[in-house]
Image (cartoon, rainbow, N blue to C red; front, side, top):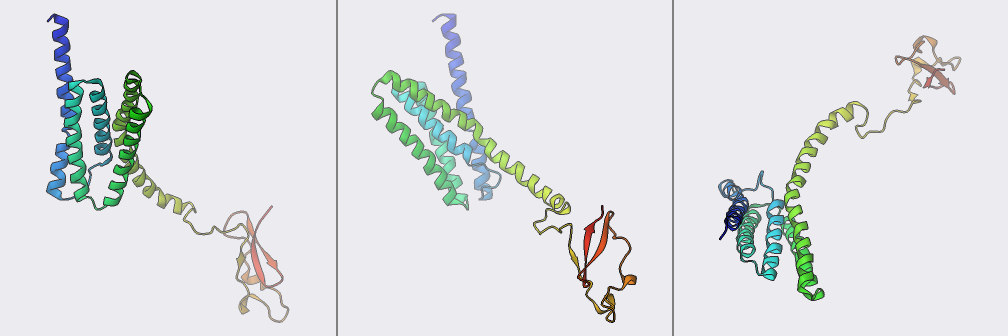
Length: 226
């Protein structure tokens, strides 16, 4: 074996070890779930997408006859399935977990059916299945962002609620620029003449640019002054 072959062997072995190490990082989450008997601060979607990714690359390795791909992804699929089962055991939202799992497994099975039944040529199967596996690999690396976006936007929205309320967007109907002010009280109306008591009507509204205007001799309105 030449120097190039030795380098390839060492690099291949290092990649296998690093990949297995990546798949085993969930063991810390597994211990956390067992100790706390809860799934707090543990993300489920990375377990699921990594498991589907392992199963897809496992089928690619079987089709290609690559022993390294088969071993690595078989180990990864076993570990991720273990994480999923433990998460399901301690999760209070089992229905949502089962629904997400069934959805991605359904996508995987549909892909298997397409490649094995509708693509008879093995070379075309390898090319298309490789592309299919690459898409799952990308989704595996992007899956933690889903929970990150959710956990980052929720506190931001909650913190913005007081500001929205202070600016008038509290969900109640805002005051119109012209609103009726109750002035049909006995002390506000001269019962003899039927006119409003000028002493009880302010010369100027508290808000700048607004004035009082009598309507039908009974009520007053805020009216924007020109």
